[in-house]
Image (cartoon, rainbow, N blue to C red):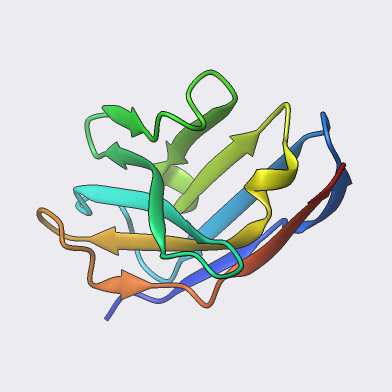
Amino acid sequence: QVQLVESGGGSVQAGGSLRLSCAASESIFSIIFMGWYRQGPGKQRELVASITSGGGTDYADSVKGRFTISRDNAKNTVYLQMDSLKAEDTAVYFCAAVRSVPPYNYWGQGTQVTVSS
């Protein structure tokens, strides 16, 4: 059972930046997919970005060019660098993982990101 703990959320003005971290309870070297989801007020949970064990990345169209996902296998941590934040990025952000292929089956508790315009 992989436990995921997010950190780095907070409040920021539009145009600002935040970096989210997701620390895993065990080595992520063999965890194929890790990702970040978000759920805004009154919205469904959506995939923001994902990264494979080989370093391949994928992004939602709404965040391409602004967000960057990365992973540090030595620290068992996945990051989400969020730049040029917009009010519509306001959401609870969740880290997720799956040992092989999605659907994701390990989830963190979430961290709140609030962007004021």
